[in-house]
Length: 304
Image 1 (cartoon, rainbow, N blue to C red):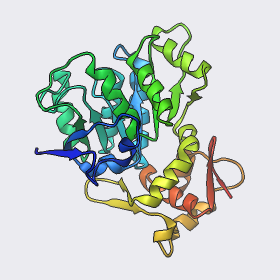
Image 2 (image 1 turned 60 degrees about the vertical axis):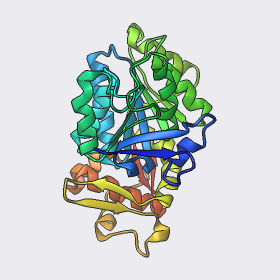
Image 3 (image 1 turned 135 degrees about the horizontal axis):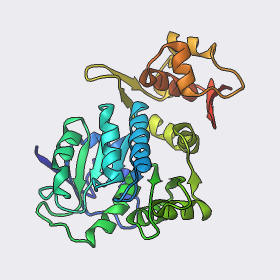
């Protein structure tokens, strides 16, 4: 696959990355350039993950791609790998930011994963020359790209001295949201996460929790870009701002209103009641929200 190289002056250079204090002067991309311009959530965590962390990273990433959000991570062993795999489980888009050159995929056991990311419409990116080896000091440097591209960073398992905490700190410096999945108080892999929560990071226990926090930023993204959510390999639902649609609410969305009230209804409950797939349901709920008909709150959706 050919490499796309963007200078910081190039119009195709990601605007969110351009705005940080020390953006890369050059960015090298293999895969789908457009993925870098889509709304993203970064998922990061420790390499020595527990089974709990692995499952949560996989499921959160899968759920995010089901509603059209790109998952960004660092291709490292552990939580990063599970986040990428969770996104790919839905045939969703995910971005891997490398601390090496694009010709030196690290770790080497994730070369196949990198190829899958590109083949499914995601991207593998780096600021380093193509043949740059894996030098330890380059990995904290790449973390600023992971956080900068994203609306927010979700930390799932981090030890007290974890590279994920560097990503969280950079995210705060870049005015990005920091979300944390809590863990057992006696687990070394959760000490960094629990400390982040104590110091003010947002505790997240579900996708609706996360979406409540980013909904304003997500609306802004939707207004600027045509959002694409994959149903399967051959069918896509296109979401756009109501300003770009004469009639953004479809007949199936009218049907949804009968299942909503002033009490929050979770998305999975709506899916069962309406017999709609989560992909289609979330697409329609987002259009309804943009039209001012429903609102996402903790616990699900309500009528406005």
